[in-house]
Length: 391
Image (cartoon, rainbow, N blue to C red; front, side):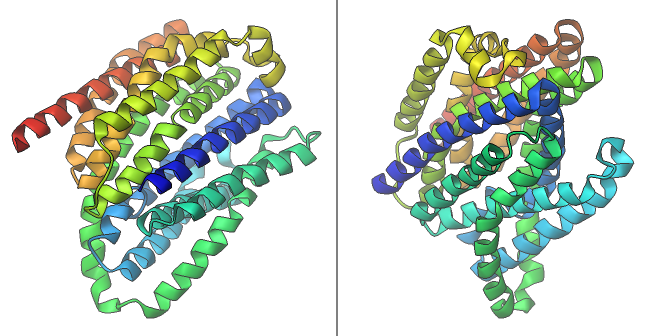
């Protein structure tokens, strides 16, 4: 367990550095408006993944320990592809932004979804060395392609490169699924799907709320301000998610062992270590001169340091919240995560429209920060309540 935790933490640190490199390259090449296009596009992809995740995503590890592995792999694979394609067909009816971009959207979304599912499968099998390899290969391919074509400042080309970066994990996962499809017990698929769908659906209610908590402001920024603001917000959000890579990866290992009913790390111990690492990273970010941000990200992103300062308390608290959320998922206690996300969504709906309309970009960041804090406090309360009930 300690070896796997160390491997996953190492992959998180290297992934953090590679993601920062990707941010630097794409922000300098695309500028604020181009990054806005990139963020807006991927926000819809993330929205589709909420529905593909009903039969897949984080609940997949739990299901692999409850029903036949071949059934889980087969159901997850076909559900992911069918939902992604169906969503792509519907997109032009929802937003004219995607006219002429449907093939690109379908490829990027399918490759991302299958990459996530493959990482969950590898976590179930405790093959964290392979997780490390694929998690490092993906950003390395993206960095290499973007670096080779720096003169191409088209966000659609960068998104095309993003899709290509997932191909190694796609083909590896495809090979496993071909074996599963050929040998799966067809008579069990219907009952397995119903069981999977019910639990996954409950889990995705939580994820839909969580998505609305933290990404609703992207559409609000697009409506009330400009694509430039969406781009700056996208860089801030990517930096925040990069800071969470270490706690998320530690929780990832813990999740796999908890789901299997094996010995796992103490939640409080893991949370303290994770939060300490995030605090250290934030301090580094805050003492970094403004000029360095401009040199690394470009002149359009001079506000990033101020935004990190405004959101620092929420970033630290939510790193703790992610550990607790993973713990509840591994235990199958999805309802606790749903309640936590509902609390965060309530805050977003109350403050989001007003703050973004009045304060623009800073209002969007402030809205997310308050939502992070409220969600985490709710999860802490529920964890303590659950612990007292068990005692």
